[in-house]
Image 1 (cartoon, rainbow, N blue to C red):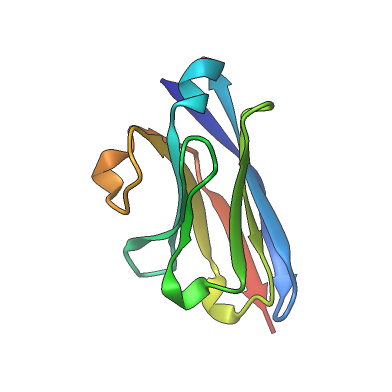
Image 2 (cartoon, rainbow, N blue to C red):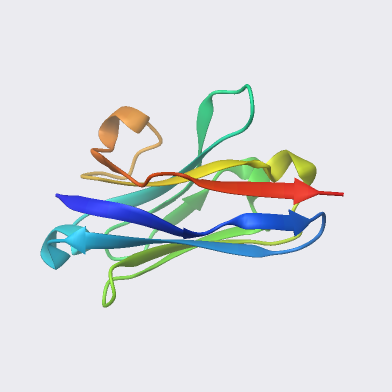
Length: 124
């Protein structure tokens, strides 16, 4: 099992960009076998999926409403997952979580390891 720690986050203005990362500790082999995801929870709302990436990084998926603005990537050499967010809007304000699990899934129940959450605030 891997442990995840979020890096980045903070405040940005509408139209700006921000890059989030999570660094995994523990077994590097376990990380390389993990499917990873980004989820976010906006104020007063349920947590929802944002993006997924396969164990090798060859397959990715971004929720339809964020396609073209958000990009997910991973680097198995340094055990990191990243989320590049561009042209940000007020609706992107949320706590962002990275997660690791055994399969490519939008279901939170399929993820056994979670980062601590990183606050992202977009202002006008």
